[in-house]
Image 1 (cartoon, rainbow, N blue to C red):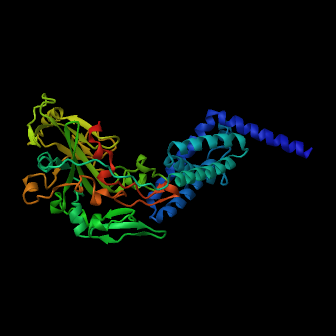
Image 2 (image 1 turned 90 degrees about the horizontal axis):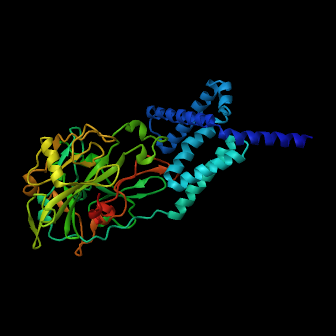
Image 3 (image 1 turned 90 degrees about the vertical axis):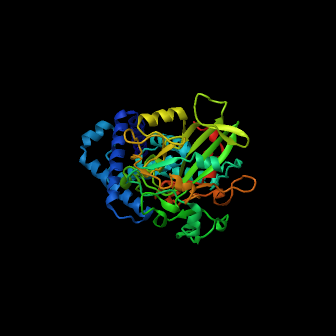
Length: 468
């Protein structure tokens, strides 16, 4: 009789677990619990940093406590109405684990992780008589999935572009160099990489179990195959004024595609601060890559000037310039905005926009408004309609915008390093990140976003003709 009674009790409990998930109120309750748990992570901003593991442990404890308090504060009748067992002190850690570990692991694993989470949780929620068991098993499955993905994919470094640079485009690169306009609150200027090497401001870093080993180097020749990432110290290269001065430079890469010439400009910043709610959105527990946090070390940004033969697009009345026996004229500019691929604008449309705003151009040089902190390139100032970006009011011009660039500071526009065959070389061929990123739990929690790789690792470098 005891066996029959126990069996009936188990079947009754299992039936309740099968029916309960079908009640939409239960889903609403789960969503409310998740929101309550996530909101408690704002408290992390009041706590001194103690490392990623310390932040994660604090987030787990605080979230568990608040969920448990919510379970006691909401009347039992309401929980029963929702079809949910109140999250007691024993249940709360499982809810917290789901919020703080399972969901972030699914996000960093992409569609595979999300699919594994949904399917696993759905099946176990139905099959297992206890929600704690379902969440516990789900956590185990997610850790296994992420571990397998990491083992199968490995840490593969990208290969630099094999695009061949167009020779003899230096004069054009200087002629069409962008006019960089920074926000009035900007604190960083484009860095001259060569000067940074010479001043030993660049470190070649190797990750170790204890910490990163980052010796200073004085030449790109010291970047060997064992270097995992480069680090440029902001304290040494952040400008003391608004101009950038002699240590500031931009770079170009010229390529030809289907009779058109693309002058691809790049500039490097030592930091990319988070533009919005950095004190909260970049903390462990809330930091989910660029979904919530734009902050990362280093930043490569830029724009691309498009030149076409003078018999193409004659409606764009720009001057014809010689290059290798041909005549080319300016027809478009592509801006490396955030939130998607670079956006291309016809030159006549840009001129009309700038003239209407009362900022006409001179010498057919494009205006580039550099967003505060994120440093993304835009053809217009902001506000209004900044979106995720902060202001880029264009109030501070780059110190090398003027004629001094081709006289006193003749090296402020430089070609990206290439070899005799026009292929990527020197620091431009380094495949690793330009900046550090430290993570735990296979990337579920990091101290910032992924640092960018060098220009030759980006699609814009090798295929600027494919820009939107």
